[in-house]
Length: 91
Image 1 (cartoon, rainbow, N blue to C red):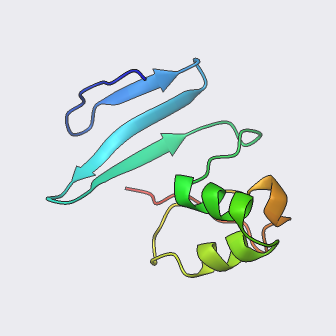
Image 2 (cartoon, rainbow, N blue to C red):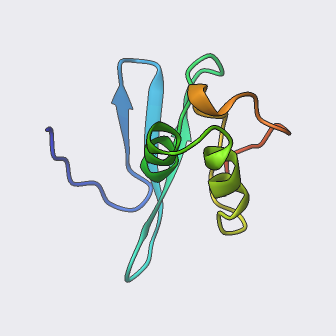
């Protein structure tokens, strides 16, 4: 695992196609912005874990329970198509 330190508004580039930027730093969380091509799905780890270990549709239910403003794009392959397109938070 590569470990990097970034400050507020600093970014890293992955594979020349993905940019991860530190948008906000709070006491208990770091808010990241991710720019990736539309053909490259981006998931939160806990959503992917739910789709692998649970019955079909569980990942959609987990996404529906996500806090307002939580970044979601796409649906894990085992969970089927997303019900509505979503976007990342714009800061």
